[in-house]
Length: 471
Image (tube, rainbow, N blue to C red; front, top):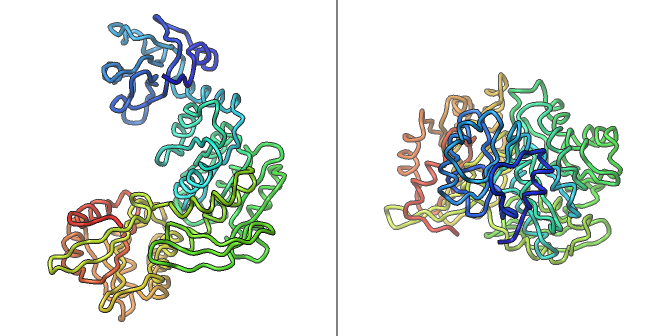
């Protein structure tokens, strides 16, 4: 076993009390009793729906060699003989261990936030930096009050590049997390009306995202989207927070990391860029101008960390879209033909929908094929929701979309706003939408599936993929 933490160091970091015969150390950390591995420590976190203390027996059965439990729950652990570290609050203790991981690390740390593209940018960073050294990055979208400290606590001491995604739904959520992470580079992908139901304006969202600047270390850098309308505000907020260097990425001619040319190709994109004074061309393994923008931020960060930018650019050609984040599938149809399905079902806001529609519009069609947008509600848009949904008409028209299949109460506003030359069908639930999509798809069609995760469009993708092959 490769030791992640010695138990002595854990006890000291968490101000814990050992109970039982302590192992020398642990090889990993888990908060899920179902997936905990042998030699891992299980942190019995109490969440909104479940209390981890109720699953300690299962965690031990699955191989956990150490339990981290709260003092007030210790009496309920009476029958367990597994070694324990007892703390006042388990989540708080995990945060302390995460801070200790950051304190002992010599890694170059990058933090990513934004209204969309956070997870994709994090995965791009992982791919781009791996040729230059050992990389540690969060699993999935572990970007909240437990995901960030968990990712920190899991960071091996020998890590050379640490990548952390930080999300928020409300003000004051990023601030405590970024002060744990203390990044050398803070990236904001874009500011858009995601979760705007919790805010009074886009500018208020920008202020909440700008909390990321408060954790940037002395001499660090803020890397911002120069094409974003909120760039001037973010630049000012970064300066106010004491960030020493503020750089832009994008197509704007004053961008430090500039996209000079973008061409959509069948299996991704071709880019001509400049990184400060260095011009280069590269292939990106995922399509879309918005993906090219994120790639600029990634290569800019690689340059700033001293990584090998040439190797990073080559690695980005191998990148593939994740599930629900642009993965492309070939769908077999009943008549022997096939259609292309672009799975963007993980999440949606007005900016990300517009960006993926732009990508749809750039895709070439075989003869007889149509561009179809399968759209679900964009959630958490508050009293502005109807306007934002109806406002998708403009990017739909710009992308030359032939048909819109929609679902959800909010998407009814789009259906009512569609022009006569765009065929529209609206469904009350996803089951009806699955039936409708099967009826409507024909040979050569390219269909984009996009909606907030909670609307459940991933079920439609699963249903349509039964005879599909991932490209």
